[in-house]
Length: 219
Image: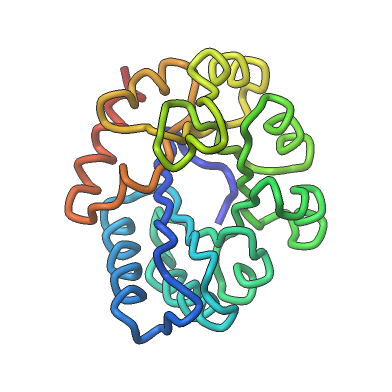
């Protein structure tokens, strides 16, 4: 599948509620796969399996099942940090954190068809992702969000706008406190789409959420 991502990008990130004792047969694993299935049906652009505490085997089994659900659809599945698991399981790519290998290393190892997303909190980090051959960067936190308060203030819309302008057409996806009420502000600031956990957490509402973001992009 071509790496180019049609805009607006909708990026569902799983909540990381699994643990090292979670198995593929557990209710949480089944819930995650049901969410992936709903994302595929709603034509969510990207799904990131952000289950950091799973064992390597359990993560591989989850990723393989998610890849099977998304195969042939408009949805692409990425694995957080673990490019090796992503490749072995047949997923589309990896999402790299600030503690992961650099995008350039992963690109050289995994090839031209492997989708690479990178977390960026500053213009410099987003520029490094672009220079390293990443396909997009998630930029934020743009708005205040409880889960990120311990790391400092949000970067804000001005920083998003500046980075999007200077790196265009490299896609920056807004993350951090994005909801249906403020998504339009992020898109107006130059975001190529929006990412989140809570925004996409309800499988029953995914189609409506995707439609809303697509309508904002069309304005």
